[in-house]
Each structure stands twice: as C-alpha cells, then as structure tokens.
Image 1 (cartoon, rainbow, N blue to C red):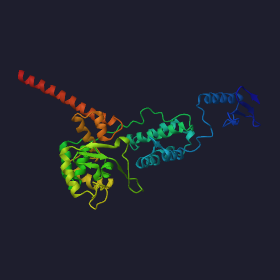
Image 2: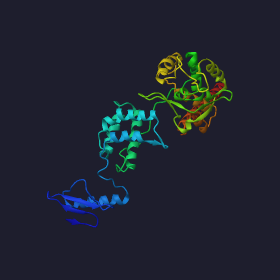
Image 3: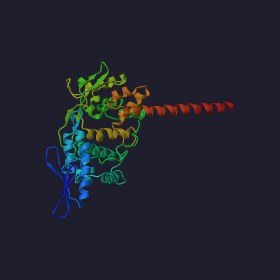
Image 4: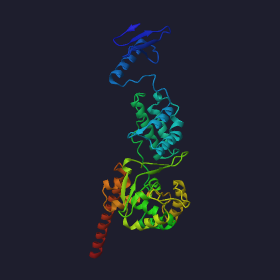
Length: 377
C-alpha cells in the first residue's frame, strides 16, 4: 500500500488500485472507481484535495437522481422573493418540462448532464422541426435555472447550460393597431364588452386583472382603477383569485376621462351588484373565461374590425403603452401603468416612439427639400 501526504492508494487483489482519503469527521472516503495504475490514483487524490480546498468538490454519491425527478421537486419547492411559484407559472414550467425537456434529457442523472447534451437538445428545439425560437428560449432559461439550483445544492460542479444568448427571446413584433382600428373594435363587440375593451386599451390592464376587477376597485369620481388581484386559471383546478403577477402589479391607474361614461353605463347595466361584485361577467352572470372570451368575443370582433391575423386582447396593452409614450410618458410612468417591475418593456415602447419621431423628422426634411426644389424650378 502506497502512502502520500494526503490520502492513500492501495493495490487490490484484482491488480487495480484504490484511492481513499479521510474526511473531516474521520470517515474513509473511497474514489467512485478503481485505477489501472498507482499514479492514476495519486492524480485523483491530488485533484480531489484541490477541489476540497477550493470548495468545488462534489460528493460522487450525489447527483444520482435524474433530471426529471429533481426538476419536478424544483418546481414544487421553488421560491421567488420568498413566495412559491404562482399556479399558472408552475403549470407552465411543468408543461415545458413534460413537452420539451424531459423527452430528451429527463432520464439523465444530474451528474451526467453534459454541456454537449444540452447543446444538442437546444439545437433540436430551436431548429426547423422545433416549436420555435421563443419556446426554445423559455425552455432553456428554465433548464438553466434548475441547474443553477443544483449547483447551489452541491449536486453538480458546474452548470451545463452555457450557450451564449440561448435564453434570449427574439419574438416577432406584435401587431400595432391604429386608433381607427381600436375604435372599430369597440364598435364591433356587443355592448356588454365595450367597457372591457376600452379599459384594456386605455389603461393596459391584463385579462386576468380585468376578470378579477370588482366594483370597489373602480373610483370613477377620482378616475382611477385599482389593481389588487388577478384571476388564476389552472388546468384541472378550480378558478382562484390571487395577487397580481408581481409586486409592481399592485397599482392604481388613472382612467382617461373620455371612457368614464362607458364605465358608468356598464356598472349600471352589466356588473354584479354590491361593492364586491365583479365588474365584467358573462351573459349568465358568471366570471370571464379566458379561452371562451378569446374565441367567442375577441376573434369575431377582431375580424370585423380588420385587425391583423393573430391579434390578441393582450396586444391592446402595447397599443395603450405606445399611446402613453407618444404623449410623453416617462419610463417610470409606463412601468407603473403596465405593472412592470423591469423597465425593459417600457423602454421598448419609448424606443418605438423615438424611431417614429426620427422618421417624421426625416420626412419633414425631405418635404422641405422637395419644396425648395419645386420653388427654384
């Protein structure tokens, strides 16, 4: 048996060599495999000692569970700002795992998940036969977050998700409506839904926030709508009402005066009674269902109004934000109206208006040149 300053290497009856060392508690820890030569065993000991000293050592007995098992536990126990995942977020993550991550990588033990396997998986997912770049980016971000936690849990030494830019979405621009199209949309829906479309367009509230809106949240005298809750619809579960999407979602938004009359009419005719009554309900008095609204109300009205194919109610948020930016809203003001914690979206709307303004300035110069040319002629 050979000895060194740290650990031991001994020859076994098979002729191979076993490397062992003593941990801080006095327990003998053996290498997870044997070695062909004594020198190989010594090299493993040296590497292990360096990793222990630097805090990068991973117990070879950990990380044996599969990615799928660990990922499912990750979704169940994940905390964001000290709170569990929102039900719809957890549902989305589980769908991404089931449909796009687990089929290719789910059965792989955590410690065997290599960067090359992740690159091959992402290449397939983002390729021509995959679900599209946006979905690929979302799934990659989810896998990277799961592996980051595995590193923190000391189950794997490094995160195998190292593809530069893979988590960035490069979605196509959403359609931008004109004022005439929005007005046509308002005219195309039944009277019951007129106030909802107007409020979505001019305040930027999400469909989940509109669905949870109650009479007590509207102060038409002051001209404000307070966002205090949102509908949570999860497949296989009963509808529930929870907090807005983020802390920034709790907000009071000023209502443009020109739609106050429509809201007063709606409250008098269609809303549930009592201060706690829902503002927007269906013909039978029940709450709005997102999918039913999209197919039965939005789709025919959007077609009648001549909106671009593939338009969604959510696109009215972008329209309202762009109009606000056009009238001088600052980044902070746009973040407040939209309920965003990050300035990224607000900056996008402002940038669109800056580009439009530059185009207008260029057009004015071109018109002046044309005018001068005509005069001189």
